[in-house]
Length: 321
Image (tube, rainbow, N blue to C red; front, side, top):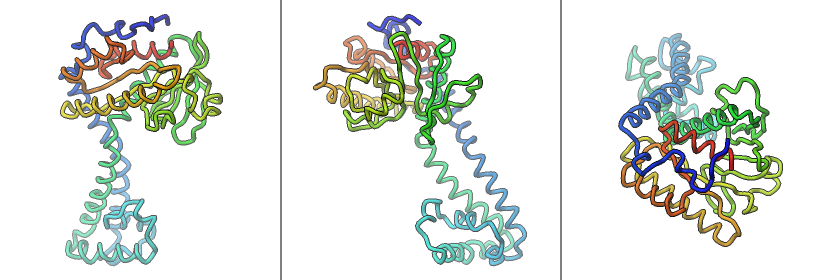
């Protein structure tokens, strides 16, 4: 896994044009988002079907109040999110359901069950829409993670990974299928020592969130530092997975500002981590700015998320730092 770290971007980039997102990549990105949206919608559709089956035993809308086990579904159809329900009393919930029945289900006549299901899905659709706002970032993180895992595996380097929800570190196994869906951190050893990568970390020195942070410590040692020791940071990067060309410039501005904050924060220390950028939607002007930073040393590396060779090269660089 030898890879020069002097100008590592030259291993996969010849000019700014190589960074520009192609039409085919944009199209594929939108398709991937649509597929992920459908995947995430599947539980809501199943819930709607279960609600429809249970509610079908009611002869009138008021009979719904007597059916056990559908209160949560009725509250959702009334327009209340799960979070909102946590702040309501039992009386508040009953009033909300009665309002749904009187104002919407009874006027629907014998189609009240269909009306109930439609309104349930309307609220669940809002929930899905909220979860989709950062789906580009989630898909980008998964893609990079899979490339990192593959890079380590083919190099014969064992790793352990941190679960997003439990924060527990899990040893590498023969079956690592889909671990990128719930992975927050990744740790391994290379020729220079232990390495730990953490996603979406609030970096104390920067006083802001950074998409990707790479450290020269093992997980236990890293936790003991509380992420406050400047010389433990090897690389910090911004990962922007939004594929819409209309939002490309805004993504770059956000990333550029984040990278500038990192430079400022580390200015008073004896070290500056390698800075890098990975983006899905990169337009020509934006590519020119990134290339300029690469040539002047403002960025150590960069890659277009949609270009497999670029992503693999950047992953090898990270794994060998």
